[in-house]
Length: 253
Length: 125
Image (cartoon, rainbow over all chains, first blue to last red; front, side, top):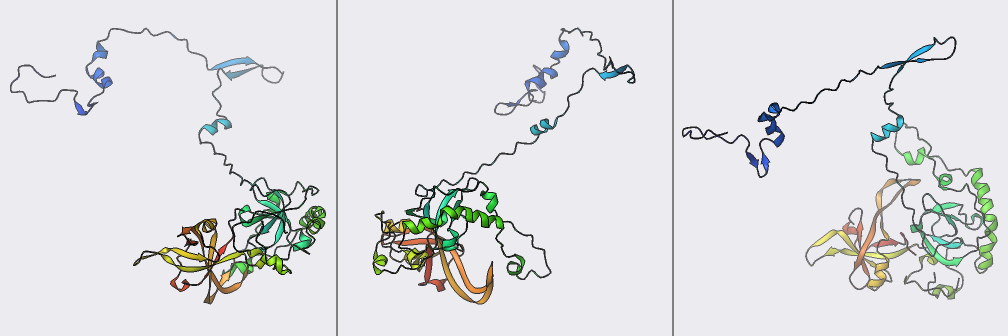
């Protein structure tokens, strides 16, 4: 604090001064201690006499060969459970990707035109939408156009207005995304990586499981398409139909 | 399949023809009179003559297919001379059915006036 009446005293800052707007050099707590107010306070809290708790407690133990008694910790420390470790790391956010919503015009039995891939241009029968990935499960039927039970994405398909009755088709429960998932055979690294695509991968072999499932599903399918559309001999016919009048008709989907 | 279904505003029927794309021509880059922007191409689609029809093609994938001298590897097939540049239709262009597309790599000038395929996917019908 400033000395009153000291003319020649060099001007000093007050002990506690503003550094910036609203920010003081010393906080209220600091200043409290600087003033020595605490030391002047007369209040004293009497210390309570606390009996030291025994760390161990002797307990009686049964059994003749067990020594009769054991020293047991009076209070067991908190066990850091495995579950408590959850609090350390932030929980892994469960990622539930939204499954592609099925277009309204695609219902079981709809005939779809495949737009891309090995079977482009072929018409296939839509069976159901697979749960996990939202891909469409379709079948040729295989006998008609060599398209097996397969998955396609909705974006690569045109839905026609033709519907085939597949209520009789019982799709096995085993036909899930895991069933269709590609299994990549590990390619051993060779000295020359010249053409890994041509040499590395192995030819796909149809498993017996696939064959039996195909037969099972196609049993209810094959005749149907030809019944509803006797003018088409097979749906593999992607070229222009025979009659000239068909060629000039407007597109009906 | 001659049933009274609503006629879709698609002028071609590639499925019948075996061609699963719409023919288009690369008519140039977007440009003002004296400057051009090579990142955006203008395609003139076969049989598409108004803005409404052109709007249908927005989002569809687009390929420029060409041949080169050297063979390149193709996954799952023999090495071939055929190459392609893929892209997408970004928006319609003008009132008479043209369309803008952006390719992964800008189209080369040699593609001017050449055939570009506008695929039917990603499909929404």
